[in-house]
Image (cartoon, rainbow, N blue to C red; front, top):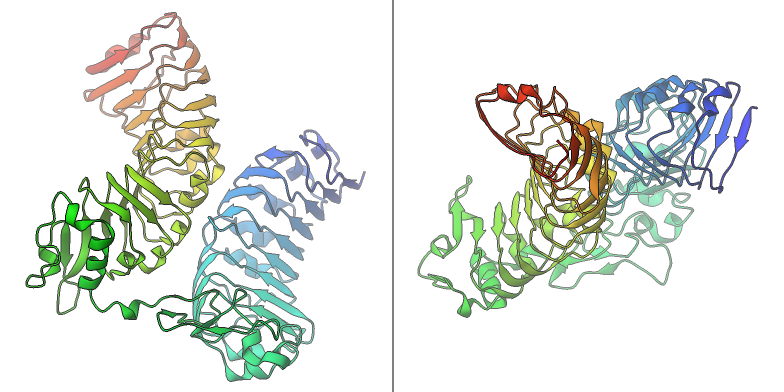
Length: 578
């Protein structure tokens, strides 16, 4: 057998396919495949075409893919792959088509891509709540590149003057899509050597196009001949839903006097920060919009004879400017009510916003303006719309406990915030499964999901959270076994998994990898078998206080004598079969 094509079938397993050693083409698009990358495929050394797109595959790409050195086409788009793109992808020297789009990849573009001289098509556009970061590679060594599709990521920096400088056939149609990133500066004039190019750059922070672009009449499927540079991007100060002009009847529209589009290729006009004259005006609007006259504490608010830094709940700092600016707003439990004005997020140095326990509505539509905001506390508020929160790239602390989200869509937004260190979502009526994209939050120190209705298994990607100190998933509806990958979370001090409605099952892990553990709560589950004699044997300081809850499981046998090694042990083990 050299070809297996089973697209759009109900196939669920590839067990045994590794014995088809002569296989050169394996196409399995839109099947019932799920779980991690099928490892049997890695034995097929003669494979030249591999298509696993539009499935439900999860987890990281195995490094062993790089051993399939005869691959010419690798199609993995529209799955749920997570983690970074392996650097060793550059070992696939015969690769001409690589499509990794519509997954949950994070990290930077691997420089190994620059080794793929035969590469003609590269596609890694991402879902809006994931995406690659870092600079755009110049791809100067990919001499055969025809299509580069990297839209909807978080790429930053300028586009190199050497971008695509090594492409040999400049007469061929060339497609470049880097729209909806965070690229900035001026486009390189060297691209004018391409005769027939479609280049999509809208939705970035591009400030200037070389005037020569406006004369490239064959570009953008000949629309540059009709609309000039507007066929590539709308001018600054104007907008279009596509960020450029496609039809005569849909030109780039100027913004009104109260809004602006400061960059080329804007999809919309946004409120112009320049019309906000002072922090006083911003806080004045906020005070009136939230019923300031009825606040519990309102000392000095709206008093123009004192600095806003003297107003209740406001803290300021000086950052190389002549006057202090607002860095903190802390008005928890202060009887605020109403809608929070978008202009609040225009405070230039705002770092901390705490409006918890108030009757307010909050949305994150303008969060991209708050470039210094790193801590948000919105526990127990009336309404929160999370649309747009993925733009809060500087956030390190997000406190959204005791709200009412009702579904699991919250994860799609929040798990895109890869800088997060502290995430609190307890008692917020969240249901559904934990997606594998949880593993992208590699900076997390604390994660609190207590008291929701989250179901299914704990994803194996939990092991990617190697910086976790406290993990709380108590009182949900989790099931299955504790993934072995949790052994990578060696810094855990507190692990709370008790009270699962469906019950975690299987033998009790020994958790010997936990060297710093102080609190381990596993009660009210369905763990079975004996307590391993190596249970918590890796604890470094056995004289420290240690609390263990194993109540209401199905444990049997005897209590290990090794527990006597701990000097200050509090252990709860009733309601078992010991």
